[in-house]
Every structure is written in C-alpha cells, then in structure tokens.
Image 1: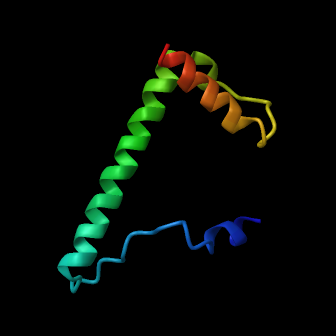
Image 2: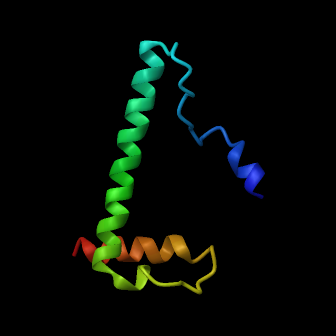
Length: 77
C-alpha cells in the first residue's frame, strides 16, 4: 500500500540538490517548501486548540479525515 501511494502522480517531491538545479527547479523546491510549512503550521494550530489530537487516536484511517475536518470547522466557528 505504501509503495503504491509513493508512486502516485499527484504526490510531488522536491528535486534533489546536486548543485546544478535550474531556476525553475529551485523555484519549485522553494514553493513546495513554503506550502509544506503552511500546512504544518495549520496542523500545529489545530493541535494546540484541540488537545484530543495530541494523544493517541484509536479511530480508523477512514475516520481521520472526518475528525480533522470537524476540528477545522469548529475552529472557524
């Protein structure tokens, strides 16, 4: 399952730094990094607000997106 997920076309990885990256690939790596930081900060804020997300969660993997979505909706009310 994990190998299958890593080969999906919608999952983007940064280009490897070999010292000869073009401006376009450097820009892509920068924007990918910035996007990742925004997402990580958002999850940090949600975890700070909803302490139940800090501990072990016994929910199924199918229920996790619903739980995260519910926390986001409640946060924005």
